[in-house]
Image (cartoon, rainbow, N blue to C red):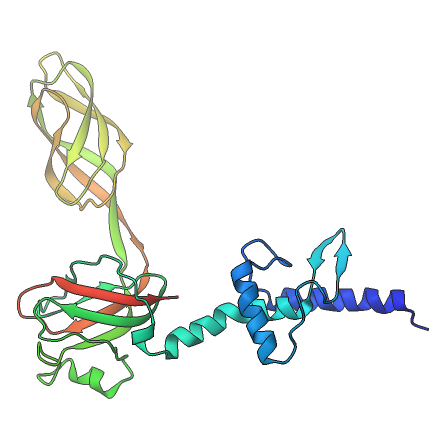
Length: 288
């Protein structure tokens, strides 16, 4: 036969399981069982709408050493869904009542065709408020996706122009390729280097931070490459690469690099079309 004690224990266990399944950890910020005063006000509005308004603290009170105090299970259930509800409101409410955010994006990245390009969207981007390139005659406040029939027109002469611009939100692979120094051979020992060990930068327009240790003879000519102190990044395999770092001049090396690709899938806003400028007049969005 069940008793009040066993019923309460079963209820507490079931409640903790339920809350663990719906609590997102967002919003309250201080853990299960704690709701900020601002969010509690919204919770009370919801309960009033449900005709379930109970003054805070008059609900079920559970106090266990292994679990936080749960003042009112209904409060926590509502709180767990507030963020998603807010997101839905921000996606459907008129833009005139939503306060946008300006991330400070000032330029776009052109494609091979310099009349089109893109900007990378902030990670918390939820909805476009207003976007305009400097060359455009008007702004856009709606974006299309690759599934929209208008998207196919953007690769033809029917694409958007400066009078009726089009912006497309899609995902783009923005992978970066970096090259690290793996081996070097001497091309020219140069002159004027301090005898003994010298630490030189490998000077390449594509790379940075590559350091090598070399040894110069008594005449100031680099004789050997002893080691790679820092492999750097961004290099390309090439011959006759100059070095710098001490009083000597003319030491050049042939470099071999290993390339690695870092994949990065990013949401972008693609724009059609501009005349000559990649300058962003303004970009405002509603954050998540």
